[in-house]
Length: 470
Ligand code: MN
Ligand code: MN
Image 1 (cartoon, rainbow, N blue to C red):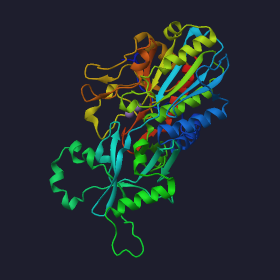
Image 2: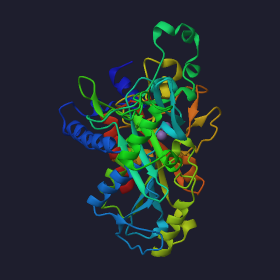
Image 3: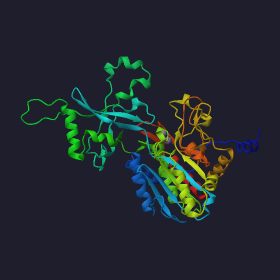
């Protein structure tokens, strides 16, 4: 074949391109991507729970002129508002100048992440060690959570209704918490266990103390002295008692901060990239899209990791109420708005991992640094539980990304029948809103410390901006 013929057929091939093939290492784009990552890392360190992510996101939004808004209050074209749903789920709304019946541009991500929640009666003592019982939240590989430093985050609502905020284990001077594991010397029987059976859920008990409460003049500690001492320390600091744990939302998360990963600093390690790595770009892209005539909404959802149920999850009808409010305020109709709306379900996918090639199908896997990953469908088995965007909608978003010069790739989560997963996509599309999954590739998803690439993060920002503006 002549060289010319080879070139002609080259154009027929779909080939993923790395961000670093598109942009040279010393280019403005690479510098911009690495600068952008700094803001993201600060956001991550401030956002270890959905509540903290809401606070951090509101701070960013208010700095951009967004103000708090409630159902029933007026709205007009040009307004920049946010709706804070119970401190755990946030909607940012940029009211556009065009007819609201032309639809809304949604970018829906989630700000909850897998972790260990405290049980309602968590405190106990056994042979001199004080512990807190946990109930894991979301899909975790339990063996990954033992013997790593953990921090306690959350709120306690006292009997009088006062809300106490708790963060212990993040400051360098703070203590951290810990889950025991077996020493290898005594682990012979465990060696042959399947991974999933090695650490059962009821072994995820948090070590929180070992010093019994003693009083002067007493020759030996009281029964349950360690537990009593833990409760006394908590009472001294927060004014809470054991019963107050019943009305608390306290979670153990890894105490590690976001850090550059690799000699080249091209990656970021952090807790909870899934899915704050899409939430942060959903916000920054919105802030840079003031030129759009469309009404845009960035959704930061809660409860995605447990099925999107509850009043702060994407299955709650609040999103319909917000569309109704926009329709009422701007003279539109909800059914028409929804029919003309477009939604990016912005959630992470799995990066191809050379250490575990068997669960991926390389021709359809997300490759690190090849940009944001578009997923036509998710689900498991025979596409069970999937949104499956139409070819027409995939075609539209493909041209939007191409026109904006975004580095992007098509990807499936993994090999057929290797497992699967879902996103909030199906909870938006059930309202007659065209929806497609798109997100950043993650390495070691749902682990206490996950890894993403700075290039893919930056392309998420650019992709969402292109979508709001298109
Ligand atoms: Mn996710
Ligand atoms: Mn997840």
